Amino acid sequence: MTKILRGLATALLLAASPAVAQDYPDRPVMMMVSYGAGGATDFQARIVTMTAGNEDTLGQPIAIINKPGAGGRVGWNWLATQAEADGYALGVYNIPHFIAQSIEGGVEYSVDSFEPIANWGADPAVFIVGADSEFNSMRDVVAWAKENPGKLTFSGAGLFVGHHIAALQLEAAAEVKLAYIPNNSGGAGAMKAVIAGEVMGGINNLSDAFRAADAGSVKILGVFDTERSSFLPDVPTLQEAGYDIDDSSVNYRGIMAPKGTPQEAIDKLAAVMPAMFADPNVMKQMEAGGSPIKIMTRQEVIEMWAARQKTLEKLLAGL
View 1 (cartoon, rainbow, N blue to C red):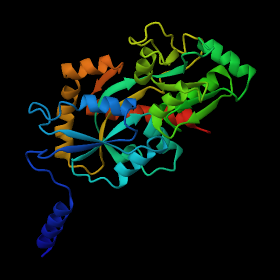
View 2 (view 1 turned 135 degrees about the vertical axis):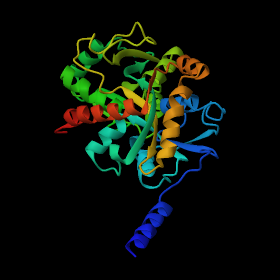
View 3 (view 1 turned 180 degrees about the horizontal axis):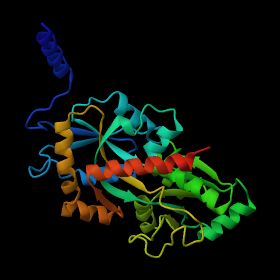
View 4 (view 1 turned 90 degrees about the vertical axis):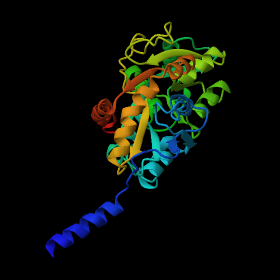
């Protein structure tokens, strides 16, 4: 009788657990982006998944859906609590964004809510101003801010995202009080605010800023990283400008799945995605868009998430 009960329990458990067919995926896969269409995350997500339907990659297309709001919280809350963990619902992660938000609280997710798959890029934050701004260097920005405490307005994609982390670091390193204004429309909205003159400056993604600067809409004054970007060889880092700021705000982007996704699906995705990201056509389009590429395997992403968790807990302590 005991064996029969155990067998029934096992059968019920298996029936309740998500399962995937041997030919997974056998239909299109959905991937959620927590930011609006046209921003850097959406722009890059569409490029890196464009070969998913090829037989030598996933064999099925990946359809992007956007669930923007509250600096990414809306989308990640949905992925953690409402998305089907069946291998056909994926999401794009932004680090440090979702980790910093989970540390700050008020969300329904943490690193334990998701399964990392692979990383495609690492996009530093940059400080930008309008093309006709009187500021031509970070020294100009900081000098004005010191003379006008709390009055230098600048935009970013939200609270406790990479842009906000960079802003906190700048305030601490330069010993100034700034007026950071989170934009509800994400990086794209924050960029529009700078171009329209609604704010005096902004912190945004290098890839978005690269395209805006190329169009003559903004000036890029500094990079929040430990070394200069090959896309912006003439733009100094904040460290070079004299401010002790590391790479904690660099925006890592990649693909994850909700916790509970079948291991078979995770393994298939983790095996396919890095090679998909490295496709020559993908690399070419990413480079043309000023989008820095950093391909990492599932294990490397697991280690990166753990390291960023520790760094951000220390950085955000006491806020």
